[in-house]
Image 1 (spheres, rainbow, N blue to C red):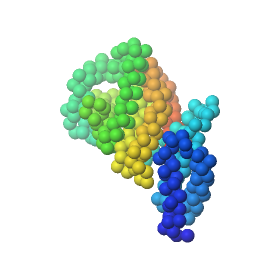
Image 2 (spheres, rainbow, N blue to C red):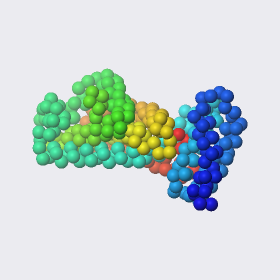
Image 3 (cartoon, rainbow, N blue to C red):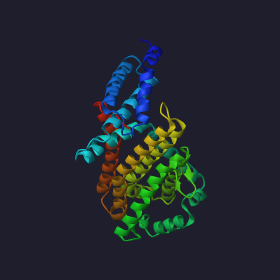
Image 4 (cartoon, rainbow, N blue to C red):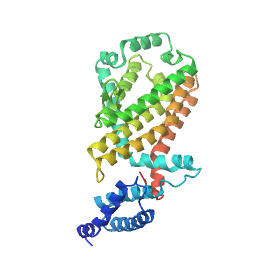
Length: 331
């Protein structure tokens, strides 16, 4: 059967599904009828995947099936393993669903990082504009005193941990939320709210160039990346969630714009929850470990490599693995 004929044959039943889902808060919906529709829908989805695998019909039916599944099981009692399945399946599937926006976030951050380095090399005044005169002067003084990263020792560890952790949680969350401003908020900035991923990349590029101009680049990189690996990764992931939130306004696909925004917001909030341990671990490293500038290089490298391996495994490789195993996103 050709795809147009398939659409004509089933469009009325699919409209009934949509109407049922629009009224899913109505307690009078017959769950048996909803279950019957769901079975028919999965048959249609299987047929479409077989004969029209790359069509918009498959995407539409897959989204409809996921929404119908949630409508059927939304009141089902959760098992005690819910918290486990969140980390082992739900969050990785969300990350996989957001893989394109996260990739865009990474590329935008990297581009900003390169711009920051290039601009700073061309004009030292750019570093002062990006970092502020106070920070630049303090860093130059610390370098002259033989301790270029002394800034990480300027406060008691616990108070520093709390302050940095809360600040980074705020930055990540509002980078995500800023995406509601038509995506631009997450990429650039929202005045008075948050600086987006591109200016963060510029600032960090300028930061490392500052140490390069003082001939202590290697010391700065090996020390700062003790916490920076996790911190920057969390920012990029939050930026990806923000881009997805903004894109749901521009490109709702086969869904209503309201539904697309709601789903993007739900997925983003879940991702933000999943980033809390990453952000707090980065704050712990920055407050308690980064200040240990005399640690052996092998230990320093081990912390950085383990942090990078965790990010790559959990946020890149593991989502691909569970999707390959047959698990599907049900957002």
